[in-house]
Image (tube, rainbow, N blue to C red; front, side, top):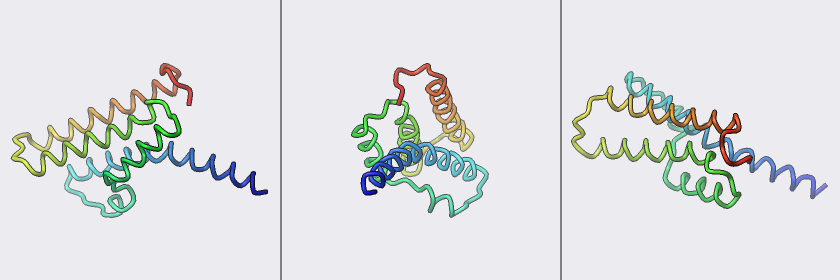
Length: 127
């Protein structure tokens, strides 16, 4: 029974590590859109708030478990969006809010297209 439990836990861990970046990216996109409309839902911050330590763990896990590069696309989206938000917060960013939401939407659409291409078999990995 111990080996079956170990296999089950391993498969559960792999599934969760694969799903978390996608869920975090969707949560981050929803938080961004709601922030644009000046709606602050704190539960999204608690559920999907992303720290750099969490991102470091997810990157390390994806390389250690030998996931293909498409599994890191949502992580790239979160990193780029966080860096852009950090830059716009601590500098006198001259762009308007509409430019910010367009930037977020463009990155999010790119993430969706890459994910769809991977699911359709256009990618080079099968994990």
